[in-house]
Length: 606
Image (cartoon, rainbow, N blue to C red; front, side, top):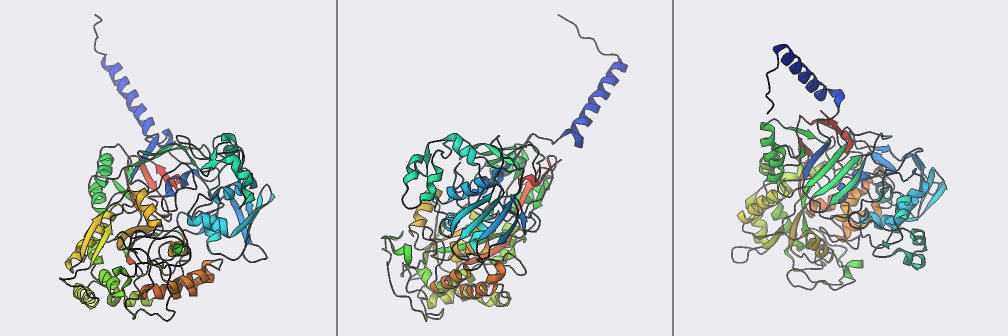
């Protein structure tokens, strides 16, 4: 057996010096990031797919780091900025849009240069009939054609001014992610929109889709169609998460970290535990757990723009008009929905119950006194302090902010009237319920639909706290959590007839007014629907810019405010907790709906 002899002191000192020098190099700024893959723990999305058009706007955040858009938004101000388009302008018709495209941009994965053909292709993929999202509806209904002027210029020809058109094309709302046509063709032919792609050649309703023959959608286990973003998806799994790889030197911003991973973890306590153990390097946490992490040396990075809105919305007040009357509907209580009725054009909030023309007229949510009582029963200040460390900005009117170029129509009276209209007063809440016919012998009953939100980790805890406030004023509240896929399917069927659920949304103002408070979009039934407000929203949609619709949205906001169209809670700072030994800084906007973060390239390595 070989005997080991101790090193002479001089040699030992030299070895130690060499080791320390090596450590200094490894830890120096020039040696690269502390980890090759930075991992962020988040709540899972409601919808998951490797086909980019399938997840709705509130769930597609995990696809966004893979793609770029013609128009981006600044991660510090939220303002529109050039991205794959260098400039844009309105056409002489006053509503079509011309874009000049950036030259020299390459698709990731060796799929060639970005050109006008990829813009047209990305639009065609969005108008396939299997996409029920609001973004697809805009691109399908209002964009007549995408004309290729040359390799680096396109015109979106539209049939009329429509507010969503530009916002859907831009990153602020999403929907027009630019994907590689060459990658699509290299995978096919195969299945497209749940049909063999060859069948689209004779598609009678829209012959433009014949251009999509020869390619196919990604199948299970494949990455999405190639994009041009600083990161590209290399693997994704509905249960575990999504892994991205740096795309090399990027024309816009090359990330510090070679890889990034969203790790899907439903339980906030588990996310914290993994962060403390060093198994993840960033995490979305409720305020209480974020403070606990802060006490142990972790840091919190806050989004640059106050964009994350958190509110509760009614599920049960549907106007039986248009597509909503096309099928028989049966609510959760077993009550068949009305399919038609005459709306009283002179109805006012003082005519109680206000919406006698609701699809479910017996739902207690149709009564303004009930909606006002449930708002007044909530101590928003206590909730803000308990769950958000007092950081939430009071949401005086959902969808609106003062002095914000993207959100117009603000009325300062909403703030001055808020205490009398929405402020915490349980005696007033009890009186309103009694006036509506509810008491100990006939209690109001409703269901709180517990909804996990990636952007608001404390969402379910807040819902349960609000349910307890309602119990304090005599309401019998059932709590229910439904499988997300089943929940969305039943939501589209208008099944939930006396339910309240939480939502978190940001980005485009008018889109969220449409989704969370109208029957305009036929495949969604989310939130309180009112014919008078819808009429104004429809008029506002016939505009091109936020400034064009300022007065109209003020009118719509006034109506919504007076009839308690939802339960406004807070504008929340979008925050993420990080390991300071791995992440030195993180600059992101917080403006993407439902997203835990955005602009991954804004992560600065230690």
